[in-house]
Image 1 (cartoon, one colour):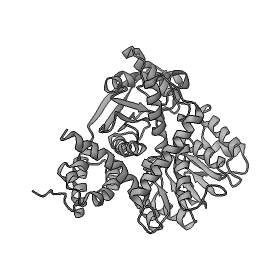
Image 2 (tube, rainbow, N blue to C red):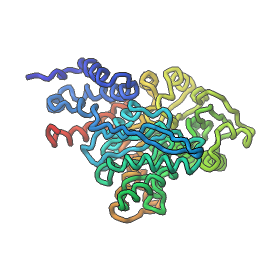
Image 3 (cartoon, one colour):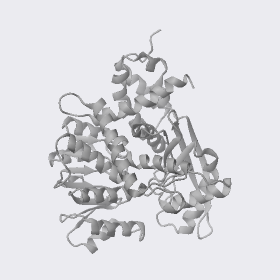
Length: 453
């Protein structure tokens, strides 16, 4: 009996089913659409995937956990937030993915992130499944004591759903070293066990030396590999970067180390444009502003007079050779992608998760721009998280140099997998297609091996 999904034309039918089962979840539907349109062509003549309904099963999370988080603020008011953990797929290893604290967090956003994480983790070659979690809690403006009480309450519920061989969360937007420390401390207190249940930990208690730099550095390494494939290099090129957090500042740092010039950084209020370049001294100043003072990027222009601040705007209109969106999802629209193309951009590498809209991605494809999607380009962070898991399991610690070499090799390997499945034979590499197919195939083949579970 033939499957109803035998033909590529049934992509629309498949997506209608996804929309019906996930009403109003626009981010999740967008993520599935972006993967499915490449996978359907790949599996068209592979009946085993159709019969086992592999894509349908990957697009349905193993479980969605939602819970109440009650905490008390410094004024003794009782506050209530909603927490989540999405465990999407563990075919190739324990669920692995960050925890996000931000007012925008909802089920759709976390399902999209967990879905993307499944393919991203597969691309690394490490034994990690896909998951994501978080809460609609905003750490900005909160005292350390308030953040601690929230994190402890959050972990009091989450601990029963995670473990070193079950689900290993990490940090994400709004969750840095402070928040990871509070959550790990609470997990340890509740369970009376020290185990590698969280990554992104401080180096004093099992963290990896390279983790803070990994996502930003990795996005630049992927960009460097794309350029080398075309006989180009980062040196001498200008770059616009969005964001000013961990990923953005370390991406800027590596662009600078490789001889490029960074022109922009941003936050939710607007962006700075420094024609003189944001060098290492300025990057260090921004790190202190954001991580210690918890200030706004607009303060940069008071310190460095060569720069301009553009309120309520994003940096994609600035003329550049390279672009690295490192802030959040859907921050780069079709019109902004056209502006980048018109200004002569050569390569785009995503440090954030799904920062470019589907329409924006089409603009880059049509223009034959080197475009590294987040599931490939920003996989360096989770790759080093996977190495942190290995170090915790073995009770060892690798030094910065060794981890740097491993990250470089991992990003090179991801690039090679993307080229293998994305080279159209005309000199253009469709990195989205390559990443989707390479990530899918490993997970799908593992699922086939398990039978119907």
